[in-house]
Structures are given as structure tokens and as C-alpha cells.
Amino acid sequence: MSLDRKQALNIVQVLTEALPYIQRFTGKTVVVKFGGNAMVDKELKESFARDIVLMKLVGMNPVVVHGGGPQIGALLEKLNIATEFVEGMRVTDAQTMDVVEMVLGGSVNKEIVASINRNGGKAIGVTGKDGQLIRARKLRVTRPGPELEVPEIIDIGHVGEVDQIDTGVLDVILDSNFIPVIAPIGVGADGSTYNINADLVAGKLAQVLQAEKLMLLTNVAGLLDKQGEILTGLTTQQVDELIADGTISGGMLPKITCALDAVKSGVASSHIIDGRVPHAVLLETFTDEGMGTLITNRR
Image (cartoon, rainbow, N blue to C red; front, side, top):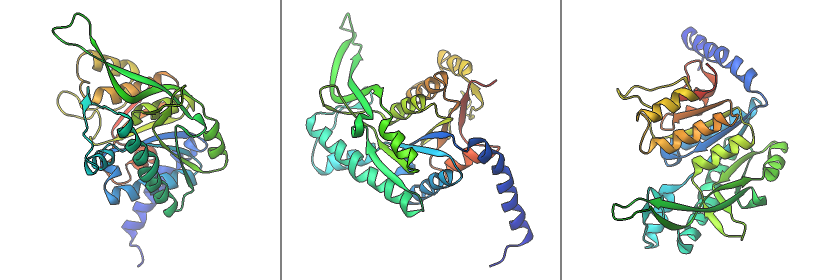
């Protein structure tokens, strides 16, 4: 079926608008955290894979980090393993950690790899344990209590935080023209396995790789002001002010803090984008309008 003049002009406009961004980002590393609805909706999963493939084809170096909370929860329920959360984090005993590693390092990781490969890319799945990519330490949570003079320190099991990133295995993958897909599982100094928040892993990787962009896919349109409007084009100073005045709070605070820390550590820009929108990654990368919330040091 041939295109009419209007359709043809629309295609030309899209390609023309994308060209300067393709030229600007060729050879640059972009770390993308894949999570939320985009990971469970079939159409969104395929559009994400095509976005990543296209980024690679035009000369960018995408690095994918993924979560898998819903999938972990579903398998734990199926296995009749009780789940407890403390301060929003899953208490992870040895049995639960086995399930987390099975889901993140196995089924979810390989599904993303297969999707990228099916759409014409070349992806390799790894966990943070491979080549000691992510060296972790145990995360301990403090919870205040009115009856306590000092906060209670809670051991939530095999939940960790990033101690150190060793990019050796990533360098091999990227130099071989493959797309790395990383499960956020780290290894401790004693060989223990730790489940780490995927946003935090993506942020740390972006810092170490001195990425051009950190992109965090989420289930909201972006950072909203007190009137419910999307905020974008923010400097790090403006974000600090929004945190101080309470505009940024609750569940969005850790994600914004992760994005903010990355920019303060040398990443050119961080983006909070709506993973519920098909091709959200391409729309943010290659269009003038972009999507979601942009944080940068540029004024």
C-alpha cells in the first residue's frame, strides 16, 4: 500500500527531527531501567525491545537493567512462601532469595534477552554475580518507634546495596557489539547473594560508565508538581529545592534521588519516563518534545 502525501511528510518530519539526536548520541552509553507495566504488557515489552534494538543500530550503547517484583511475588504465592515488607522492601530469607534469583536471573532476564534478539538485536543476559559485576553489602533498615530512644535496626535478609561496580564483564560485552541485560543481583565479599533495587543498580552503573543518559521507566507520567502538572527540564538545584519543600515525597523520592545522584556524579542527564506509553524510550531520546521528567546540570 502506497503512502499518501500527508503520511509521507509525517515520516520525513519524524526522521528529520531524529537526525540531530542520532548524530549527538552516536557512541554514547545509555543505561535504561526496565520495569513497571512495561515488563508485564506484551505490546509494551515488544515495543521496548524494538526501541533498544534501534538505539544500538544507530550507534548508541544501550545497557538494560531490569526489575521483576510482580513476577517474584507471583511465584512466591504459587509456592506458598509468605512475603513480608519492611519500609517498602521485601524481607528476603534464604528461601525467598532462591526464588528471587530464579526469577530475576532466569525467567525474566532470559525473556528480555529473547525479545531483543527476536527483534533483530544481539543481547546477552547477566546478573551482578557474573564476573563480580556488582559487589554488594547487606542493607540494614532503621525504623523509628515512639517507645524507642534510638531507631530499631532491622535485618531484612538478603537485601543489599551496591558496594562496588567492576565493569570488566560489561566492557567485553559492549566491545563485542552485544546489548547487556542485567539482573540486579549482587555478590558479597563472603560470596552471599543479595537482591538489590533495580533503580539503584541502574544509577550506579550509569555513574561508573559515565553514561550520557540514565532512563528510569515507571508507572507514572513523570514527576508532578503540587497541581498535578509534569515537571521537566529541572536542574539538580531545583530538584533539591523540590525535595526540601515536600513536592517530592513518598514512593517517588527514592527514584528521584537515584536520578539526582547520577547527574551529580557526572551522568549528563536523567529521565523519569512513563513505561506505559509504547516506544517511550525512543520518544524521549529522539524527539524535541521528549517525555516525562528530565534532570540535568545544564541551565
